[in-house]
Image (cartoon, rainbow, N blue to C red):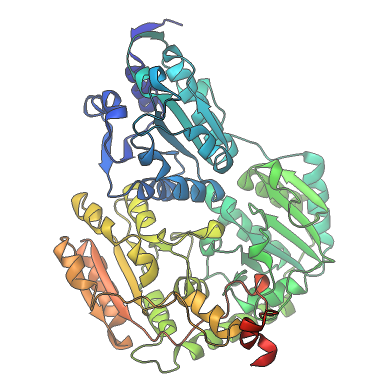
Length: 578
């Protein structure tokens, strides 16, 4: 293969082009300016943000909605360390991400020079790999390695290159992705697939848990056919409400915090669980509503593309390492050919329908409780009714955002992009911007509490600059309400650090940055506000003024306990003295 003389910057950019990268997000810095200078001629757009944390959140969401690896960059030292939280979040979300990380120049490494940091050590624990360029001639080769690992292990990879290594010359052949990485994983062990089909066919109360892998692989129609063949209710894994269509007769909703009781009661009686494209996370399977719903005696069939996640949290009967779609297709094939006598269980269908109705009635009833000025659940209910089928919804972390887990329903067209189990505030709005980049024509809505909004409102300027018509639904309750609920239930209403003295309104701030904005304090106008904002195709901030006293259950009930105090000066705080 012919090798051509080029600079390391040219080799990097040409590798990005070969990977189909059409943009990078970040903040400009001198460290990578030689590479940046090539972007316009290469057809790569640079998307400036206001804070580097935003860059990796955007690329995380971009990856989730497109299936392509996100790429971000920043100045060496503080620019890159500003991405720690968002890179860790993308990594835990299993989103392919490459961080082009310029580091201090080799002549001065170790002198604690300007903006010097050992970025490889900082990122080692929060990425799938850190790839350090050992020589300018290896610039392209190491970048290919970064992409290979990001796709293969589904997570974040740090590509660290000393800032002086962008310069000089090398001889390089620019390879196509198929020459150095393989995307297809196959269906897994045939023996395991046979055993899975036999277990499912013999089950009396099978339940399916559909996860992120089902969404990413496009396996929803196949999972639906398996469910119909088995008359199996389908629950979706925690914060992946888009993993099965809510209008399907076998849908029972999400598990995990603020999930669906219909899903939990269905799962609690399962004798066989088919978990597809999910790691069955610890937090996503904890007891909720005082229901210990994850059955210890059930036989679990787990399909995951990453062998590290098989039986990581729950013991399994059958483990299948493979692509969710291909493995599901093989299981369906076996059910149809080897077990043709499987018939629809009408009694189970009635039970599923009854649970669907009971759960819907419960969350609507709770939403209709009056609030001053508005029950946050009522606002979420009205928002859910106003969302079009192809909507992309991003959700943050916190009391209101988590309560959205009860109300958000998707058909196969929509997407749910959540902060997931890394659980950092300030995720939803930057993620919405990245999702909009990935799907320019889709309606995109972010659901955010006012605490998280304080960490991301500066990015309204980014939305305006790049004409990203995201609708931010900011719930104004003037507190960190998830923590407030903990202090109510565990600390006798002693509120410390929970109140947020916000400005009188966020709307003038949004308008000053060039966005549209509207304050909403009545449930009667919620739907119209959402619909109008989506039609406008402009960056919009909707401020929902809600009752801060209407709160969901404690977020970390599993990790909190009533306080005991031994020293005399603190004994009045002991729960036994309340």
